[in-house]
Length: 91
Image 1 (cartoon, helix red, strand yellow):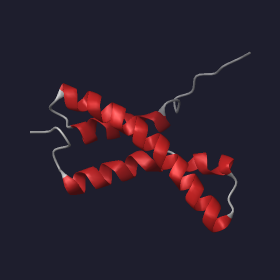
Image 2 (cartoon, helix red, strand yellow):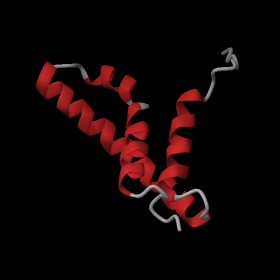
Image 3 (tube, one colour):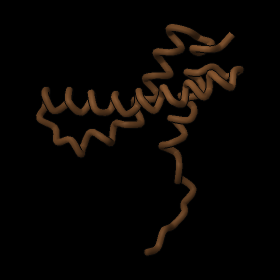
Image 4 (cartoon, one colour):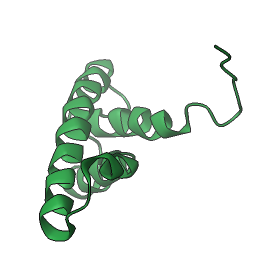
């Protein structure tokens, strides 16, 4: 098995990492940890709910919905910045 490392490896994870730090607050290490756990749950449950919604509305197969998974952290960033600009545990 041959696995190749290219420069674009990890770009999809970068949105999740950035969202975890923004959601938790940039100046608090415990906020970043809480943001990471919260983003894990939000990303998983958001993708599942989005899949169910698209399946109900457009009869989209479940395997095609995972392409929208990077959208969930960006929505979480937008919602967090609208509610609390300093993050959930930011001071």
